[in-house]
Image 1 (spheres, one colour):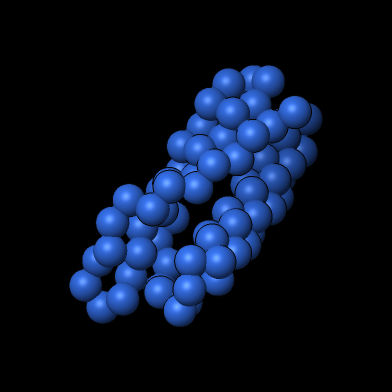
Image 2 (image 1 turned 90 degrees about the vertical axis):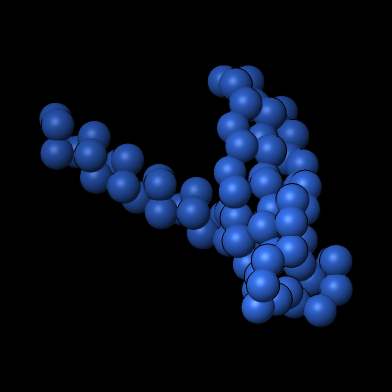
Length: 72
């Protein structure tokens, strides 16, 4: 089973936060930087980071499926 960890790396000017999303999966480890606008609380910030990560994963899925289909 995969494990997901969030680590806030830094606060940037203009209320932007930079997080790393660390994924440990059966296939290996992945670390993604995600920049968000401050949401007002740690819980809301973490929710926004996870939502952004999910959106990225969905975009990757669509792109990879498209690439596979064009190669077949």
